[in-house]
Amino acid sequence: MEELDQTDLQLLRLLGEDSKVTIKELAAKVNLSPSPVFERVKRLETSGYIKKYIALIDAEKLHYGLIIFCNIKLKQHDKSIGREFVTDIMRLNEVVECYNISGDYDFLLKVYAKDMKHYQDFVFNKLGSVKSIGSTYSTFVMHENKNSYNIIF
Image (cartoon, rainbow, N blue to C red; front, side):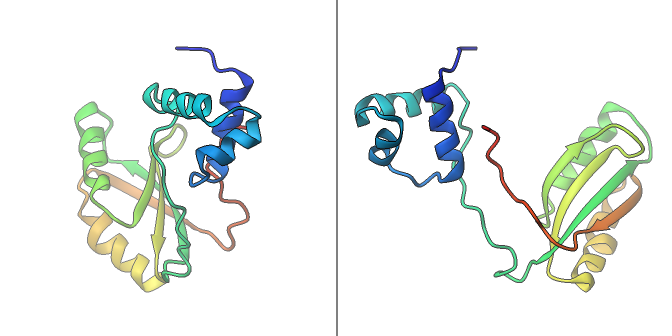
C-alpha cells in the first residue's frame, strides 16, 4: 500500500465533498497544474482509494423520507447461513446499507421507505421471506442531522 501525501489527501477530501469538481478546479485548489492533478486522481482511482463516483439523492424529494435502522438476528450462526442472508438482502432495493455487526444483533440494515405502510409491507413480504432471519428490531429516524460520506477529515 502506497503512502499518500497531503496533496493526495486534499484531493480525496475535495472529491468527497463534490465528485463533479473539474480537474482544473481541483488543480487551482491544491496549487498544482491540471496535468499532475489528473495523474494523481487516476492513481487514486486505480489503486482503489476512490471506489466510484455517486450522486447523493434526496430521498424525501422522491417520497422515500422514512429512514429505518433494522437490526437483524440470525436463526443460527454459520458461514453458509450468513452468506445466504447477505445474498438475500442484496436483492432488496429498500436496503441501502448492510453491516455485519457485533453485539446483540448480527446485522444492521439501513432501509428507506415511503411511509410506515410501505415499511410494514417490506417487513412482512420481503424481509419476512428471508429464511435465515430469527428476529428483527427496528429504529425509526425522526430527523437526519448529518449525512456525509466524506471520510477524509
